[in-house]
Image (cartoon, rainbow, N blue to C red):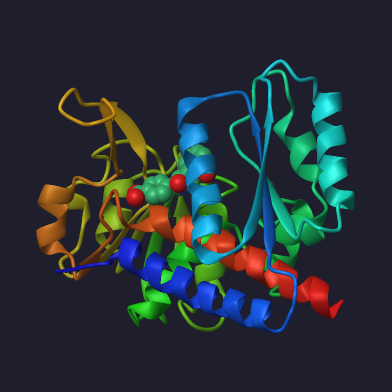
Length: 293
Ligand code: BQF
């Protein structure tokens, strides 16, 4: 069993991006500038946004954090987004999810200009991704693809079972892994809450991507010997012994599943850090596209 070390690979990617930033500076070019919009002060969201801003600083990107009160109206939030769309200094921006209940997430994601949509959540980018046109690929599925590539995991002709059909992970990774090319050419089954006999479907999988958010959902009897396990779950569970009073756990019963696997992503330190690295990669891409536009 080999661990897919997302922490290490994400640091490699950040180092590679930092080299590009250094070159940009040496050439007197503008460096990539990422903005993040945070509405309210949900604990997890604050942690995610702060780690994105910190990563920007580490690799030499400019960053802007737009903090808005959770009482903001949808109309005013859309104005803030329009300001970022029209701010030539900003290469890309994200709106940290989830948003307060009184704001329609779909309206907000539609308002982000596709050329600055480094999260890849706008329908234009989703459509372009599905059609294999240049686009921004959502950071988590992009990170999974990159992890599979860098560990040279064979996906061609393999049976991949994706658990969960979210717009951000399950659906896009099922599309990407079925496409031609590196980390693709897989025969993908997308499963969800209405799927019958999930246990047997999983047992036939060479690769399982679990993006459900239910701790210990994927158990040893569901996993074939030698399977590759990608655990996208990140559920916070109370843990008095942990520094912050909680720890994050994946979807996979790691202790019992890991010994059966050829490769497995740990939680934490697997897919999560890759998500951050690929957001930065998308921001670099955006800067390059804008420069050449
Ligand atoms: C790790 C996210 C659900 C909803 C909104 C490293 C992250 C997580 C875990 C992280 C996530 C999840 C992010 C680890 C960003 C991934 O070491 O395992 C990093 O920061 N993520 C987000 O911005 O919004 C979310 C999950």
